[in-house]
Length: 279
Length: 284
Image 1 (cartoon, each protein chain N blue to C red):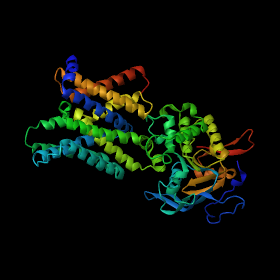
Image 2: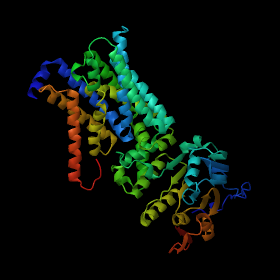
Image 3: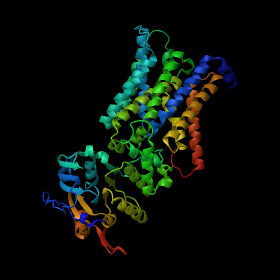
Image 4: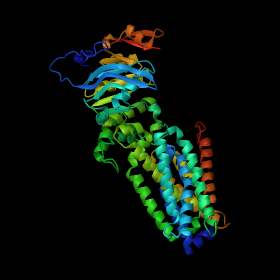
């Protein structure tokens, strides 16, 4: 993990006073939110949100259910638009930057009976790059093959998507996102419904991807988050950015309320310790 | 059955009927698979029934207005495309009104058809044959028209196969990849509309839904991919239409109804066998 990317760029009160980092680093925000507010059916979901994410950061968006995590992702993708403020992705409007984003949705919204094999799902990531009709090109297949290998799902390429376990489906959907050859990877709850062993494996995969990509993932799971990401964006109507090391009990209690039980793990080998929240 | 095989070699109308079944099967296989996975069977049903309006109007114009060039098949195509577009736009703009609009088009289309046919001089056997199929009365001209429809449907379905699969599987992701999801949805509805017209020649528009869904539903059980499902349901559909022709020929039964009963029986058998073989599985 690259330590100079750990510094947090913004919080709510200091929205305009972005710190100047080392001049040797290219100052190029991938995501910029400026005073963004979003209202759904007259209920404020997000209020005056300010933050930015730089190139090759690995950031997690955490917060309780209904706090506006997925809303943040959808704003980044330009699927919804804020009532106030501006969202810039690669310095452009989100709709224009979409092609550079690899998006992994929650697999729960997909039809589990859909007759499609793993390879075909991953190839869908090539749409928009490939020709506009007819079969996929050889290059498309090569890219999809690499994405599957990267996610360690090559052996299951001919499997029925519905025959896969939850963790395998997540990985196929990440492979599909990778097949778009993205510069930014957006993952919505990649750890949902996974057991610890699978989750650890997935986190390590993401960690290795983070060397080349900007990754933003939504999670309600602090244990996952604290060990791998550079920075945590805590969402509950507003967004507060923390370097991972700062995410301690107080923050979690503020975010989730006092009913939450805190468990602190001292990890072997790593030497670091991270907080872990269980509701 | 034996009589059917002997007469098949002699009578052109039987050969035409068999060929019509084959043409319908190809369209059914390709588009039926998309209809099943996108779960728009009810939309296909609405389109199929509203087609009667176009057929009735075309028949009326042909006989009363002396528009010789206009045939009921032309009317059917026009009505099918029109109702596909209406339902499609409503479903994209106001999803919650979709079923109401389908129901309205379904009934209004039929009412228009019945009225026009009743005002058309001559025998009203036409109405029955549109509703329940007239595969034994397909003319050379109609056969060529069906070939044309088939080519359009199959070419579009296969050319945009990847796009349709992506839009049906995960429309949001497809949209993010820059695909015009709404356009492909409307195109799929139009292709479905044309397919119902072709199938209506075989079993009549009342029973189109069964022929569109049953072979595909059986094929789904044996298929891992949509492409395989298409090929298999194509073969099954041709099997059902041919069997319908052969079985109904001797005892002089209505072909359309016989075809549907055979398809229905096959589907039922598949479910029972599946239940017995895989007791753990739920539902068909």
